[in-house]
Amino acid sequence: YLFGPSIATAQELYPEVNFILVDGVPDGGAASNTLAILYKEEQSGFLAGYAAVKEGMTELGFMGGMAVPAVVRFGYGYLAGANYAAAEDGVKVNVRYTYLGTFGEDPIIVTQSEAWYRDGVQAIFASAGGAGNSVMRAAEDTDNVMIGVDVDQSAESDSVITSAMKNLKGSVYEAVKAAKEGTFPGGQIWNLGAA
Image (cartoon, rainbow, N blue to C red):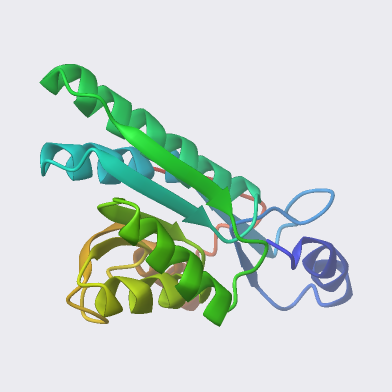
């Protein structure tokens, strides 16, 4: 999403090049050589929160990298899903919620995550890019679990019980395939969700 201003300039300077901007829209909109792909992260976040509560977890955590739109949507969806499942099951759910101020790995995040786990948090949803690796390490070190983000992170650690995915690979594949076939959907903004 941080490439929005750059793509706005580049799409005008290089009209023969097709651009795909993920998680953002170029400033001023997508030109005929640019496809912007957005996602309804709140939907997969909802399913992650719902699943955690249905698995019997009532002490949850959310660590977002930064309060940018996609991360905020993941977080709000997570809360909504957890609350929905809690209402169905007649249980009370507590959620610790924070933004870390970074998407990078940091030993401080490992320490903070370990503290949450020691205080009874059963699962942390890390919508935090590389900072999620710090949460993952804390989950491993304390024999706890975490929820991955964007893609299926289960192969990265046994501590990942599920991932709130948004089909990045599939959507970018479809866009690149369309460009190769001469049907690039330039000028469009895709806003993809569970449907």
